[in-house]
Amino acid sequence: MQQKRIFISILALCFMALSVILIIIFSQQSQSQKSGKLSIVAAENFWGDIAEQLAGDRAEVTSIISSPSVDPHLYESGAKDALAVANADIAIANGLGYDDFMDELAAASPNSGRTFIKICDILNSSTDANPHLWYDVEHISQVASNIAAQLIAKDPAGSNYYQANLSQFNTSLQPLLTKIDEIKTTYPQAPVAYTERVAGYLLAEANLDVKTPEAFAIALEDGNEPTPADQTTMLDLIKNKQVRAFIYNPQADSQTTASLKQEAEQNNIPIVETTETMPENQNYQGWMQLVLDSIQKALKNTK
Ligand SMILES: [Zn+2]
Image 1: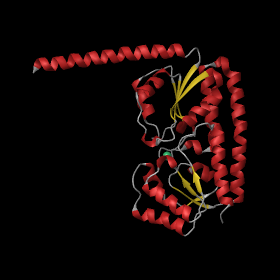
Image 2: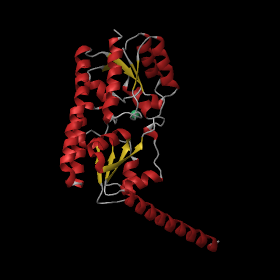
Image 3: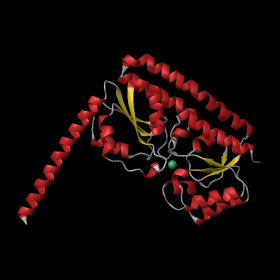
Image 4: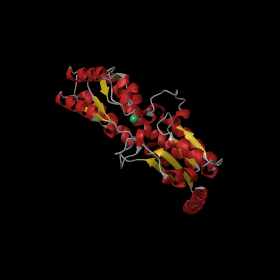
C-alpha cells in the first residue's frame, strides 16, 4: 500500500516536471515568433479588433473567443489560451463576469511585465452592470484612448503611430454616432423587445424603450429558463404587436427564444440579430453599422 502511494507520488512529480518543461519550450518558441512586436491577447474578438486597429503592425493580436457558434457566457478556456495569456505584453478582458477565465489565466502565470486591461474598469461600470460593454458605442472612444495609452507605455517608440491610429479610429466612429442620433430623433421611445441584453447599451443610446422583463433576459443570459409569467409577458408583447422590433441573439438560442422568434415572424415584427461576438470578415465599426441599419430598417417598416 505504502509503496503504491510512493509510486503515485513519483508519477505525479514526473508529470509536473514534464508540464513545466513543455511550458518552457512552448513559451520560448512563442517568444521567438514575436519578432520584436508587442504581443496582445484579447478575450473576445471585438476587443481584439479594436486593439489591432490601434496597434497596427507593431503588435500581434490574438483573440480567444471568436466563433459565432459558441455562447461566450459559457466559454471554458484551454491550454492554448493559458499560453497566450502567459506570453502576452498586454491582456484585454471585458470583465463583469463575462470572461472570468482571464483572471484565472493571469493569476496562473504571474508576470509583472504584463499589462492587464479590463474594459469594465475603463468605463467605471458597476459590478452588476450589463456586461455587453462593446455595444456601448458612445463610450468606445474612451476604451480606445485607454488602449492606445497602454500601447504607448509599452512601446514609446511607436507613440506617433498609435496616436495617428487612435485619431483615425475615432473619426471612423462618427457615422455610428450620427446613426444613433438619427434613430433617437426619428423614433423616440419606440418600443422593442430583446431576448438578451446584448445590445442594451446601444438601444438606450438610441432612446428605444425595451419592453422585455429584465429577469427574462438575465435568466436566458445565465442559461436558465425564464419564469412562465415572464414568458407570457413576452408572448403578449409580440401577439399584441406592442413592439416594433424583436432583437434576437442567435448565439444563445433555445427553444424559448426560437418559438418567440417564430411568433414575431408570424406577426410581421421585424427580427434584428445581435450576436455576442463580431462576425467574420467584419471590423467593429462595420458590425455596429449593420446592427444600427437593421434597427433603423425595422422601425421604418413598423408603426
Ligand atoms: Zn450575452
